[in-house]
Image (cartoon, rainbow, N blue to C red; front, side, top):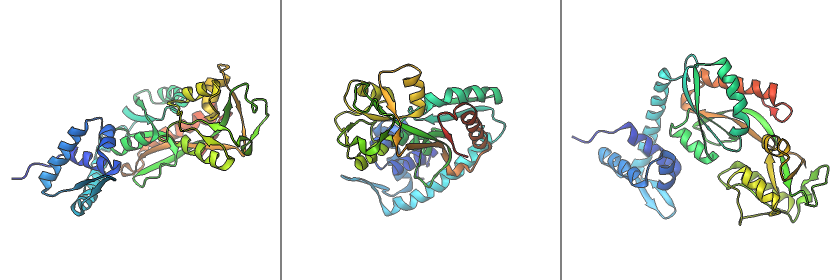
Length: 310
């Protein structure tokens, strides 16, 4: 009699297929690579076929692996739908929702949202964890979150999104920089400048990269910020210039009289932020209610900084 196939094995296999490598999949699942390998081997033994081949360029699915991948995706969608029957995503906004948030957004937005959430839905709790956007997306698909707050677009068919707001990006320079006294800065004024960014795991990195290409600036590969605070500190030391989101600027630069100067860009640059959840979940009532609540907070308390999207 063949060994039983477990839901854990199917989840691990699905995550591995999406990640394309054992290291990334293991990190997303919060387990070691050997543990992941053992679960995949057990699944292959239960099915009686080789599902994955390792290549220098990464992992590839065998013909059997492709067929099994489609079946597994279908099974996990059905399981995901089944869990909604006992989830606060379905009913009266009680219990605990797991929310993932990128650290460039959550700390500057969620405190105000949580105050309103507690007032309107006192029986609902949010379990919040920070992570880089790519990791958040992988963890959402793997079922570690019910929804994530992230920069859009996400670019996956198995994830649905609801845009919440557009956030201006402001140029940050050392107070002694030649552009510090400018009323506004045109993009071509950045020609020849060294620009700093977060790692490529953040969508903000790509926006800064495109700005450098368009403006003739140089994107530093020697130094990368691990956080918005780290970026600001590097700018204050004269190591380069960067873009900072408006919520961060309002909270950590202007309110604290920080050690950098910020200026608007022309043409203006923005990022779009929204909620994302698994497409297999449909559109649970909790998503609608949480989206409406966030839009209310943005409209009533942050319209001087953010541009609401309805």
